[in-house]
Length: 189
Image (cartoon, rainbow, N blue to C red; front, side, top):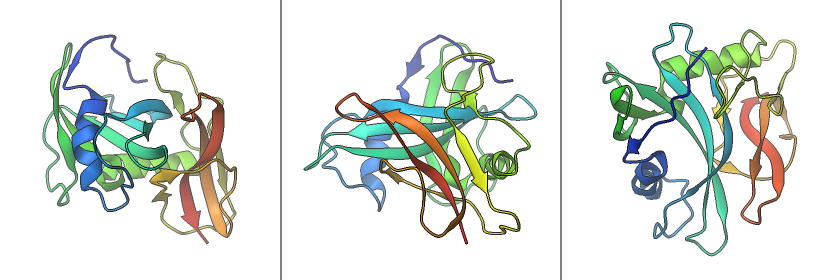
């Protein structure tokens, strides 16, 4: 079980994302404001060394508010053979020291744990509470589904992905403050 430390982060996660998000091809904002954390969940590293968070952040810098799904991986050392562009940045954690933050969609540990979640082998954990599971995360995987999980980057309210062989849905707070649910991960048919 991962431990959630109540401490400082410099820069903060959203400060890192304010620099990283506008560089992504799926980004729709103007890049003039720091995104706001809107929800998400965590998965545990079986070895207890790496943090894995599926974060929803809302950006209001564009023509309309957009909520992005940014899976993040927090490592105590650089990821060997990290794919090009996988590093989001580094931060200093008040307890753990320097952390390398990676785009989870390009991190092999997160992808392996995501596959285990889809197969029902591991549970989703609450984003900010030690030891708590997140009952709002729902997982569906059709029998015989063999596709690789795909991260949905732009979140839209709605509880199913047409034609998908599986999905992970979760909740987040929309820009107006209402609680909504949508697809965070899909498995193509």
